[in-house]
Image 1 (cartoon, rainbow, N blue to C red):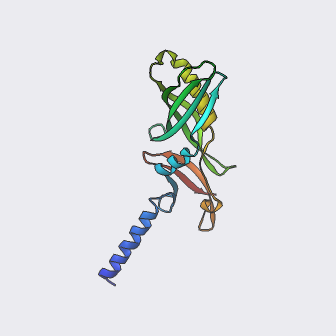
Image 2: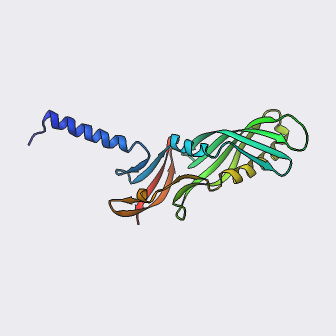
Image 3: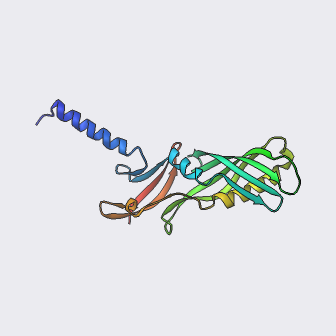
Amino acid sequence: MPLTATTARRLAATLLAIASLSAHAGYNVWTGEYTFSKAELQSAVEKRFPATLRYGELVSVKLSHPRLVLDPTSNRVTTQVDAVMTNTVLPTPPVNGTMSLNSGVRYDATQRAVLLDKPTVQDVQVQGMAQYGQQLNAIGAVVAEQLLKDYPLHTFKPDELRFNGKEVVPGAITVAPEEVRVQLNLK
Protein backbone atom coordinates (compact mmCIF):
# COMPACT_ATOMS: atom_id res chain seq x y z
CA MET A 1 0.00 0.00 0.00
CA PRO A 2 1.58 3.31 -1.05
CA LEU A 3 2.20 6.07 1.49
CA THR A 4 -0.16 9.03 1.12
CA ALA A 5 1.08 12.57 1.59
CA THR A 6 -0.95 12.90 4.82
CA THR A 7 0.46 9.65 6.25
CA ALA A 8 3.99 10.68 5.30
CA ARG A 9 3.55 14.05 7.07
CA ARG A 10 2.20 12.33 10.20
CA LEU A 11 5.07 9.87 10.18
CA ALA A 12 7.60 12.70 9.77
CA ALA A 13 5.96 14.67 12.62
CA THR A 14 6.05 11.60 14.88
CA LEU A 15 9.73 10.94 14.10
CA LEU A 16 10.55 14.61 14.69
CA ALA A 17 8.76 14.52 18.05
CA ILE A 18 10.66 11.38 19.07
CA ALA A 19 13.97 12.92 18.00
CA SER A 20 13.29 16.10 19.95
CA LEU A 21 12.55 14.07 23.10
CA SER A 22 15.99 12.53 22.97
CA ALA A 23 17.62 15.95 22.70
CA HIS A 24 16.76 16.78 26.34
CA ALA A 25 17.94 15.12 29.53
CA GLY A 26 16.64 11.68 29.92
CA TYR A 27 16.89 8.24 28.51
CA ASN A 28 17.54 8.05 24.79
CA VAL A 29 15.97 4.86 23.46
CA TRP A 30 18.14 4.92 20.33
CA THR A 31 21.52 5.13 22.06
CA GLY A 32 20.79 3.45 25.41
CA GLU A 33 22.16 6.51 27.20
CA TYR A 34 20.92 8.98 29.76
CA THR A 35 22.04 12.45 28.68
CA PHE A 36 22.55 15.61 30.73
CA SER A 37 22.94 18.89 28.88
CA LYS A 38 25.64 21.38 29.82
CA ALA A 39 22.89 23.78 30.98
CA GLU A 40 21.44 21.14 33.34
CA LEU A 41 24.87 20.38 34.76
CA GLN A 42 25.57 24.11 35.13
CA SER A 43 22.34 24.45 37.10
CA ALA A 44 23.31 21.56 39.38
CA VAL A 45 26.74 23.05 40.10
CA GLU A 46 25.31 26.53 40.73
CA LYS A 47 23.45 25.13 43.76
CA ARG A 48 26.82 24.66 45.49
CA PHE A 49 27.68 28.37 45.23
CA PRO A 50 28.35 30.88 46.67
CA ALA A 51 30.55 29.17 49.22
CA THR A 52 33.04 30.49 51.75
CA LEU A 53 35.84 28.26 52.96
CA ARG A 54 38.73 28.81 55.32
CA TYR A 55 42.28 27.72 54.72
CA GLY A 56 43.83 27.24 58.12
CA GLU A 57 43.04 30.24 60.26
CA LEU A 58 44.74 32.64 57.87
CA VAL A 59 42.72 32.88 54.67
CA SER A 60 39.02 33.00 53.90
CA VAL A 61 38.06 32.18 50.32
CA LYS A 62 34.65 33.16 48.92
CA LEU A 63 33.78 31.40 45.67
CA SER A 64 30.98 32.45 43.34
CA HIS A 65 29.75 32.49 39.74
CA PRO A 66 30.67 28.96 38.62
CA ARG A 67 31.17 28.36 34.91
CA LEU A 68 31.25 24.78 33.67
CA VAL A 69 33.58 23.62 30.90
CA LEU A 70 33.16 20.08 29.58
CA ASP A 71 36.42 18.53 28.33
CA PRO A 72 35.85 15.48 26.11
CA THR A 73 39.59 15.01 25.56
CA SER A 74 40.24 14.20 29.22
CA ASN A 75 36.66 13.06 29.97
CA ARG A 76 36.58 15.60 32.81
CA VAL A 77 34.57 18.61 33.96
CA THR A 78 36.18 21.93 34.86
CA THR A 79 34.44 24.37 37.17
CA GLN A 80 35.81 27.90 36.86
CA VAL A 81 34.85 30.18 39.75
CA ASP A 82 35.46 33.74 40.88
CA ALA A 83 37.45 33.82 44.12
CA VAL A 84 37.81 36.54 46.72
CA MET A 85 40.56 35.80 49.23
CA THR A 86 40.77 37.64 52.53
CA ASN A 87 43.51 37.50 55.14
CA THR A 88 41.63 36.79 58.38
CA VAL A 89 44.54 37.84 60.63
CA LEU A 90 45.75 41.11 59.13
CA PRO A 91 43.47 43.94 58.02
CA THR A 92 44.29 43.91 54.30
CA PRO A 93 42.02 44.48 51.31
CA PRO A 94 40.53 41.34 49.71
CA VAL A 95 42.30 39.88 46.70
CA ASN A 96 40.22 38.93 43.64
CA GLY A 97 41.01 36.11 41.27
CA THR A 98 39.72 32.97 39.60
CA MET A 99 40.11 29.25 40.26
CA SER A 100 39.66 26.35 37.90
CA LEU A 101 38.77 23.08 39.60
CA ASN A 102 38.97 19.93 37.49
CA SER A 103 36.95 16.77 38.28
CA GLY A 104 36.27 13.36 36.87
CA VAL A 105 32.72 12.01 36.78
CA ARG A 106 31.59 8.67 38.26
CA TYR A 107 28.44 6.82 39.24
CA ASP A 108 27.80 5.80 42.85
CA ALA A 109 25.30 2.93 43.10
CA THR A 110 24.58 3.48 46.80
CA GLN A 111 23.44 7.06 46.20
CA ARG A 112 22.13 6.32 42.68
CA ALA A 113 23.96 9.50 41.67
CA VAL A 114 26.42 10.81 39.09
CA LEU A 115 29.13 12.51 41.16
CA LEU A 116 32.12 14.75 40.58
CA ASP A 117 35.17 12.59 41.29
CA LYS A 118 38.66 13.38 42.56
CA PRO A 119 38.58 17.15 42.06
CA THR A 120 41.92 18.89 41.70
CA VAL A 121 42.98 22.48 41.29
CA GLN A 122 43.84 23.14 37.67
CA ASP A 123 44.69 26.81 37.89
CA VAL A 124 44.59 29.76 40.30
CA GLN A 125 44.89 33.25 38.84
CA VAL A 126 45.32 36.20 41.19
CA GLN A 127 46.62 39.40 39.69
CA GLY A 128 49.85 40.63 41.28
CA MET A 129 50.33 37.44 43.33
CA ALA A 130 52.37 35.27 40.95
CA GLN A 131 55.10 34.86 43.59
CA TYR A 132 52.56 33.05 45.79
CA GLY A 133 51.63 30.46 43.17
CA GLN A 134 52.54 27.47 45.32
CA GLN A 135 50.49 28.73 48.29
CA LEU A 136 47.54 29.63 46.04
CA ASN A 137 47.59 26.16 44.48
CA ALA A 138 47.63 24.62 47.98
CA ILE A 139 44.56 26.70 48.88
CA GLY A 140 42.94 25.67 45.59
CA ALA A 141 43.58 21.98 46.34
CA VAL A 142 41.83 22.29 49.72
CA VAL A 143 38.96 24.19 48.12
CA ALA A 144 38.54 21.53 45.40
CA GLU A 145 38.48 18.73 47.96
CA GLN A 146 36.07 20.44 50.35
CA LEU A 147 33.74 21.92 47.78
CA LEU A 148 33.38 19.43 44.93
CA LYS A 149 34.50 15.99 46.14
CA ASP A 150 31.59 13.58 45.54
CA TYR A 151 29.25 16.46 44.71
CA PRO A 152 26.13 15.03 42.98
CA LEU A 153 25.37 16.33 39.50
CA HIS A 154 22.25 14.15 39.25
CA THR A 155 20.53 11.67 41.52
CA PHE A 156 18.48 9.13 39.58
CA LYS A 157 14.88 8.58 40.63
CA PRO A 158 13.96 4.88 40.74
CA ASP A 159 11.80 5.19 37.60
CA GLU A 160 14.76 6.66 35.69
CA LEU A 161 16.60 3.36 36.14
CA ARG A 162 13.75 1.26 34.73
CA PHE A 163 12.88 0.89 31.09
CA ASN A 164 10.11 -1.33 29.74
CA GLY A 165 9.76 -2.93 33.17
CA LYS A 166 13.45 -3.88 33.30
CA GLU A 167 16.05 -2.47 35.64
CA VAL A 168 19.03 -0.71 34.09
CA VAL A 169 22.34 0.26 35.68
CA PRO A 170 24.61 3.15 34.72
CA GLY A 171 27.87 2.16 33.05
CA ALA A 172 30.45 4.21 31.17
CA ILE A 173 30.23 7.98 31.49
CA THR A 174 31.32 10.11 28.55
CA VAL A 175 31.96 13.85 28.70
CA ALA A 176 31.15 15.55 25.39
CA PRO A 177 31.50 19.26 24.51
CA GLU A 178 27.85 20.10 25.33
CA GLU A 179 26.65 17.16 27.42
CA VAL A 180 27.51 14.23 29.64
CA ARG A 181 26.25 10.81 28.57
CA VAL A 182 25.74 7.85 30.91
CA GLN A 183 25.48 4.45 29.24
CA LEU A 184 22.64 2.40 30.72
CA ASN A 185 22.93 -1.39 30.69
CA LEU A 186 20.36 -4.06 31.55
CA LYS A 187 20.91 -5.45 35.01
